Length: 160
Image (cartoon, rainbow, N blue to C red):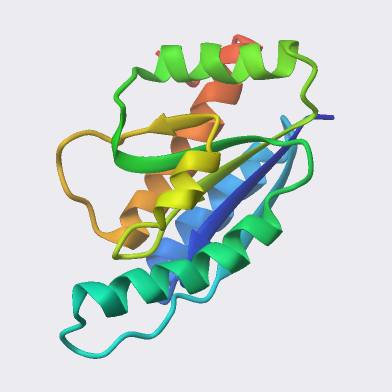
């Protein structure tokens, strides 16, 4: 069975986000082996300097890069990534499966983004569009799109 790992920085705190994340993780488990990895966000001072932010992102990069499953196709969510439709996302995921890969790993970086070397490691850079979303809501949106992509591939009626 295909494996999908979602790496996120920070933990969900609000019950409604936790509930939504659990629901989509449960739905995804019908299509793949799904793993959610919540990694700690590096603590920065109240008004961090660019150098402090870069140092924090580098520390996070060590943890992130060590958690990407070996041989997995790796996709990061970043503002400079490509904007695609749900159907195109499903096709992209299907092509990864057809390429012989047995797993895919997705990353939602911290509130300050991610280190450049993490982006360079990515096989694909994906954008959620030009709007800014709360970090925790972005996680729910990614989970929903992963579920939708799997449902599209399976010919489910979920995607209308």
